[in-house]
Image 1 (cartoon, one colour):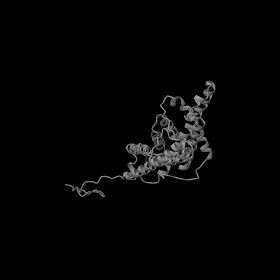
Image 2 (cartoon, helix red, strand yellow):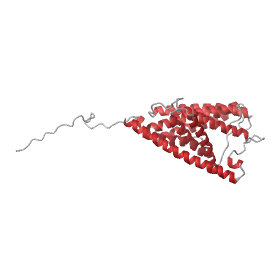
Image 3 (cartoon, rainbow, N blue to C red):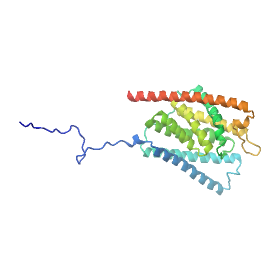
Image 4 (cartoon, rainbow, N blue to C red):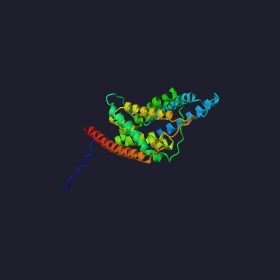
Length: 303
């Protein structure tokens, strides 16, 4: 006796008009940012710097001004205006690109509740220690010094505009986008490297990348851009003060590296060892803090 075998259609099987199962379509936002996206956003930033710089040179020449021979206050004013235009266009371009690629969600968090003066003081000292540790390497790299001029316009560029725009871009858009897809560790490392490369010159690329690690951690620890902006402003203010203190009568800035200022090898060696220990201990603390943040994010996702 033969048994009839009934074939039942699969339940709830989605089919297209051709009778083939429809492929799952993921939203574009889930793929942003890729490495290509990061390179594209970096390309936007660098291209804008070049274009604005060239246009600025042409406009200055049209009005009989020369960046090399301009008075410090005039140079500072021209630099501030060009920087404002350059970073405004850069930020607008990067945000528009992010929108086109499906980037969603908040990219900037501002909160005063997370501000911790002790954390900011520790981070500021750590930046100084990192600078000492990097000195032997930085002396080997070419350094094309950029003159921002002198006076209030120079302070505006270095202490106000640079911290605001660069933190919006690097710790806001880049870190926030990377964190949304890859988590805190990749966001911390990726945004710091982006920040470093943005400075172009070899000396600044190295130092800015490492400083970016500290700025990124402070931003993550406090969940606020204000902390990174304040720390960035303090660092730039200290750099500007050193530039003023070590300027020569001819208008050139002498080396502010500690290795060039301390002529006692023993004293410098002691300071260097202390700086290395501080960096190692702080690095260990930061890494473990990031691990705790990562676990907390996993728990929130699983809840």
